[in-house]
Image (cartoon, rainbow, N blue to C red):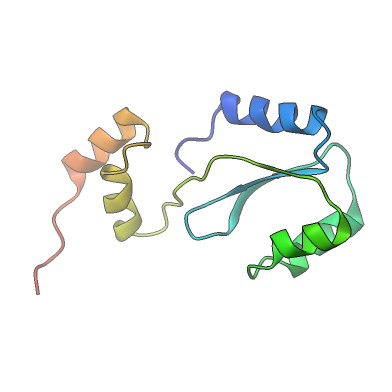
Length: 109
């Protein structure tokens, strides 16, 4: 995750201090990139693990879990992800510029 920084950690801690049971940041592919809890809770972590196929929000709601949501981030797992980040207006400007300078256009079909 290219934009993980201290501000993100502060935001997660603020959400926990405000009463959230768990704070979740999801990447563009809907998979979490960060989970924050005040103290280890095996039952809550098992719920998260069982629900990562897309049902995590519903599972939290059914159990009355208070959820804090962080900004989405773009996971960099492929050249297509890098091309998308290079034109993402929310990408860190220095990283986006670096990517734009290094990426070649994909072959035209």
